[in-house]
Image (cartoon, rainbow, N blue to C red):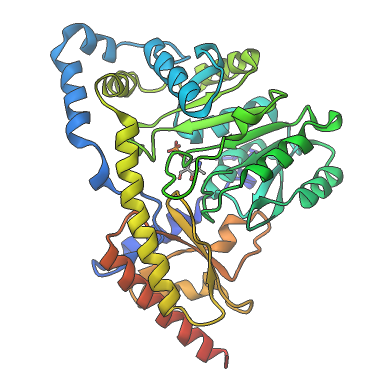
Length: 406
Ligand SMILES: Cc1ncc(COP(=O)(O)O)c(C=O)c1O
């Protein structure tokens, strides 16, 4: 086969590489702090089963779930989603502002298809969600990482990056419990960011707000999403049921004030897959009609808080001086920074030998920086396993320090 030039830029995910390496070891004692899975024990199995039975037991609904549907998405599901976003996020949208997509992942890809010419610049946080980058890479963009601090994207660095790259088309950000760092931008940061982006010379740049973790807040007050603070209509919002219901459903949505933009995304989606899975759309719709999803999300948050707190506590006790970490108020991940001379990519083998895994931080940076960092997940293991995983990891850190004469 003679591949298209764009395949030069496409790459597989490091997360998959780590998963493959773990699978090849076939070691049931290995504690995976590397994964990005929500806890399946928290899936509302009974309620989702009842919703499926509602569909199966009603011939009309069952037939509807097996038939082609609209590319835009199931009309009733769109109504429910618009109502929910207006209520929770103070948006002022109708289904005309929305498109159902197959995961946020497809939303990122469709937006890149619609907006990015070869060589156009996409600015991303440093570090950022690596599969988000992978969704954009086939469009052969110039991806530029923008420095962040403990509060999120740095506006001075954003200004420098936009000035250096006048062909910037998209700024892709995850302001809530970011993957990989777990950080959330405070309100002031969001306002400062939007004020900056709304300047006349930047108004044409789309802000892609990826928010799959926004509802998974287990500490502190809700902070409005960029979309609800946006006055210019620049923000394109991505939301998903993956972290609050079940990722296998693959139901997510794109929201924009610009209905023409949504129409264009719909046209691209039609070419890509005609529509998102009809059965799961009807299934999720019936689940939402019969259940209080907000109460379910609360249950998830309470559970994840306990795990995150336990992880943070044991890391504080076990990790040697010189290793620091973020303390998230929500989401599924936290980020560890080791001493400068550590290379967590190289150290992964030692960690796997010690029966613990993580994702090396360099993979979340477009320029390969962050070699001394790593992402840890706290949702896929119970507390005793998290604690044991940290003890093992602390042993790896101490051995590395000894090796380096520290
Ligand atoms: C920041 C971010 N965006 C998007 C996704 C993909 O979400 P979905 O399952 O809705 O495609 C993930 C999944 O981990 C993520 O972390």
